[in-house]
Image: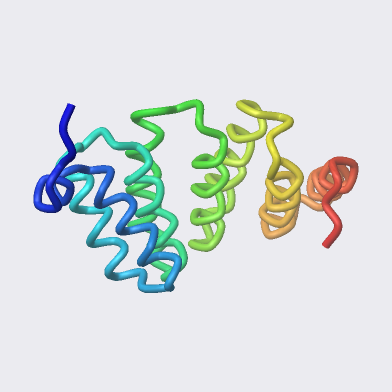
Amino acid sequence: MRLMTSAECQQTAEYWLNRGAALYNESKYDEAIKAYDEAIKLDPDFADAWYKKGVALKNQGKYAKAITAYDEVIRLNPKDAYVWHNKGYALYAMGKYDEAIKAYDEAIRLAPYYAAVAVTWNNKGVALKALGRTGEADAAYAKAKELGYTR
């Protein structure tokens, strides 16, 4: 086994993912997205790069593009509850409440006890309320509270 040169490192998808994460942590979202794109160019099936690209796009308010990235993650790993949650958030932000509810339901179905499930239940309640479905919204809020949601 030998150590990789700097030039060789820059040709790996993992390098570009880590570079993107560092830029993201500095709130340099455009540069982070470019780094994630480099990772994806080297490995089109790199779900982590697609996911992080989606998060960076979401943080810029580019929800349609974020959903496109999330859909790639779902294609590669349809059982990732976090990506379904984030897709729901982006859909809600675009006013697509019915679709957001479906995405939240999928996140809940896949991982009813994952760390952010209380937030998912709350967000589902917000989307239901936006559709005027108050009774269902109240039930979702109650479930969120039961699971520890405190806002």
